[in-house]
Amino acid sequence: MTNQKDDVNPGDDAAPGTAGTGEVPCPDCNGTGDLNGVSCKNCGGTGKVIKGVGGA
Image (tube, rainbow, N blue to C red; front, side, top):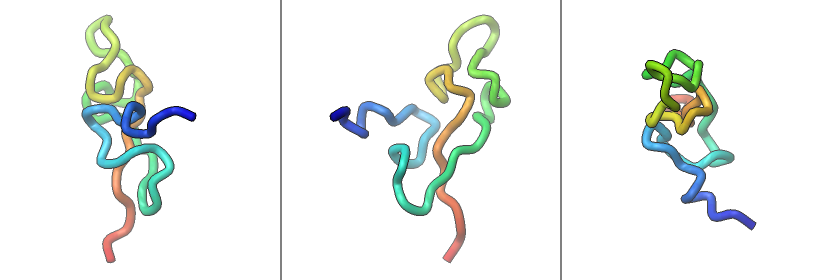
């Protein structure tokens, strides 16, 4: 079993699978995972970040 804390990238609000969150395109690399020929540090090269959804 992997530690979910290790799966969190700098641009994530929470770990993957956390209730009330969803994947959105990374705002730094526009979802490409690449920034000027280098893996995007904000999303860890995935092109996605985890953000809170809803607004209760």
